Image (cartoon, rainbow, N blue to C red; front, side, top):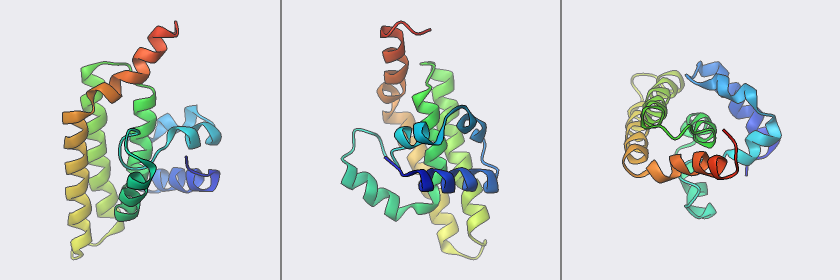
Length: 142
């Protein structure tokens, strides 16, 4: 769970970079967002592994932030699943271009990582995408 200061920092970066899908953040309080955001990697990963991924890929944190909130509000559809993963890739490229000049190898590493993580989510994330939707269905929410 992220602290409130980290949530405010990430929200600021999402705005600064003009990331796609950032509007979803406005529907939650900072406290709710702190409970939703788990960093880079699925919730099933141990905390130490997500912390390591966050440390290795700090520029993708705002991208993962939006992605986590989208997944928490999953509608369970394949179309939205694919859109969310494509948005992760696109936002990762946006961050890479904004944070690093064209001459910096880090720019291309961040782009590659965004593409790679989006592909991993698309390939292996279906059950994690469906879980919040199914939990709401079982709880009687529409």
